Image (cartoon, rainbow, N blue to C red; front, top):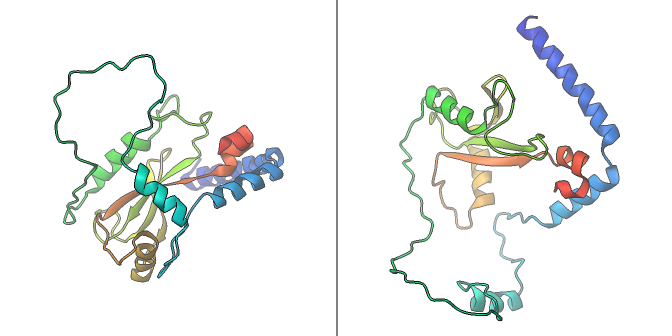
Length: 212
C-alpha cells in the first residue's frame, strides 16, 4: 500500500476502535472521574488575589513545613554514624542560547518515548500497555530546534518516528501561557519544556475509577 493508503487504513482502524470504546466505557464512571479530576486541579488566572488555602491551613503550614512524619511509638532508636554535609534543595540552570539540531531531538524523543520494533513496548511501564499518558514538547521560543522553527506544542509519534505540530503559538498565546504559570510576570526559564496530557477515557475504560 502507498503511504496515503496506509494513513487511511490507520485512521479507519482508529475510528473503529473508538466506536468499540464508546460501547465499553461506562458513561457514569467517566463522568464521576472527570468531576473528581476537575475538583482536584487548580487554575490560576491573571490578577488573581484570592487563595484556596484558608487562614487555619496557613497557620498549620507555618508550623509543620520542613518537619518529618515520624512514629510516636517505636521499640528503639538506633543512632547512625553520619558525617553531615550541606544538603541543597533542587536547583536548575538553563542555557537560553542553546540550539538543538534535528538529530539530537530525534535521539531524545526516541530513547525516551520510542517503541521496540518487535514488542512495541516502551522503556517505561504503563496501565496494561495502554499508555494513556501522552508526552508533549512545548517549544517556547522560535528557532530553538532547527526542524521546529515555530513556537508551539508538539507530540512524538513513536510508530512513524515523526513529530506532530499540534498547534503553533503566537506571541499572544505565549503571554497567556505565562499568565497561567507565573504570578508576577516572570519570563520563561527554559526554551523547551516537556509536559504531559492523559487520555483518561482510555485508562477508565479498562480499570474503571481505578484508572484515575
